[in-house]
Length: 83
Image 1 (cartoon, one colour):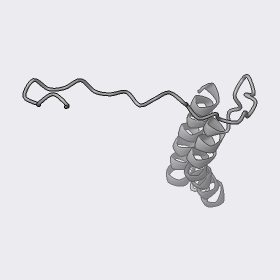
Image 2 (cartoon, one colour; image 1 turned 30 degrees about the horizontal axis):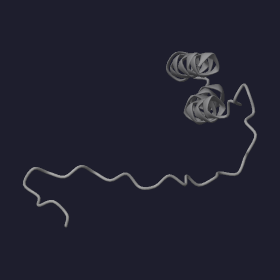
Image 3 (cartoon, rainbow, N blue to C red; image 1 turned 30 degrees about the vertical axis):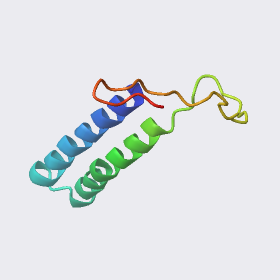
Image 4 (cartoon, one colour; image 1 turned 180 degrees about the vertical axis):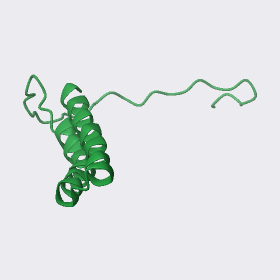
């Protein structure tokens, strides 16, 4: 979660700096590079947030079927008893 928040903070800074570079300083190349960074960073942040390893690797084991008999549901009061 911390990496995602840091990445979103960098994205916000890129967006603000892009506005300053394009509108105030008229630095076209730098401004568009910052806009590209602000557009691409959310994708990178989501991929990094989802690529977290589990702390304990779990071994894969075969699944054994359950051999219990099926559970019989109780009769309703309006049903006839079995003969």
